[in-house]
Length: 472
Image 1 (cartoon, rainbow, N blue to C red):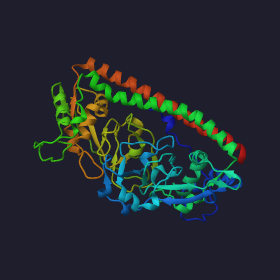
Image 2 (image 1 turned 180 degrees about the horizontal axis):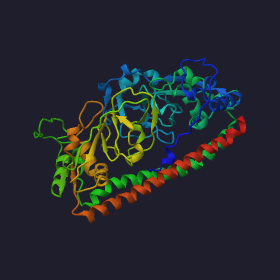
Image 3 (image 1 turned 60 degrees about the vertical axis):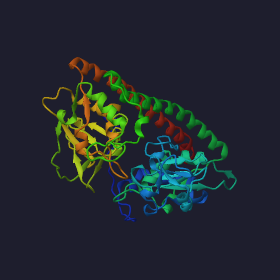
């Protein structure tokens, strides 16, 4: 892994006083951040002066599991979540999409989304993430999101929602969001009053359009790199079935009627013909259970004065790589201790790629208690990289997907992990060629990801070029 992306800037400063006891984080008192905000204040206006309304999503007790309906449900509305805001601040389809009935949608009248609304992530690690809703379909929010609904004009200046969206998604908006609510004790969060207090630089219409045009030009280039990253990473998951010549059954068999069931599992997905066919295709080839290849590697937890914390959100699901970590003085729940060389599989989301091999630089880090740790047996006929690539692949991820259990946040059990069927190559030469082939496409995906990050950085530098000239 390239550690350049993980290096943290070390900064120290002394405070003469603390006026706001709710803001005891360093970022809230960082002189550079405060200087930037003061510059924006001098040339900008409060969001409060150009908003029509700022609305919070419904409280958690307003939505229950039984309120959700299938995607093909008649007269349904989409329930927007943080996962529906993509890397470019646009509304997207996710594999976690949820829907509610039209009756429930109309009941939650305050949080009905309208075309031109800015959808804001106001809690958690994605705080400040914003998308512009430019569609006409029925949509509502969950509790993690809010709506910024803008006025049409401010004085003689027309307000472009796309420009406000661009500004708030930039360094100038994000620094203010983090300053206000990003580092509270506990989970970060923004109140409606805090959102209203964000300052925005609002140039005339022609300047707004100029900034949008410059940003969109680089955004299009960034999207190309991002799409290539997705394409290569997805192919690296499909390639194992081609290399091992194992067919993936048609998933039309997901819906079926049958009196047969396996063991004590009565759920339809686990007992589907698809899973049975997939397993049979693997059983027809040389194979092992994961428990034949790896042992349980639960590590004794070591308490310390601070921890390097890796959340599930810090794992790149597409490439099964750790992208970042946080240093924290305490932990609010049970965590897993990471040890170099261990394979960690998440109970939650492993079918999407939440599985990693711990590299040397992450030895001693801690992560979600959802992660189950395994170590390679001494007599294993395959390498840990081979196992990682198979678990990421469609051959195994589909086994996981069809073995999930639970009513809301579905998980795979540790026993379910141990029973996963892993195809085995004929010999060492075949394994080395297999690993080499997968690494080729992972390398392509990683290069496209880094190109995407560079373009995204340039995208915000364009905003800085325009806005910097105004506030400096």
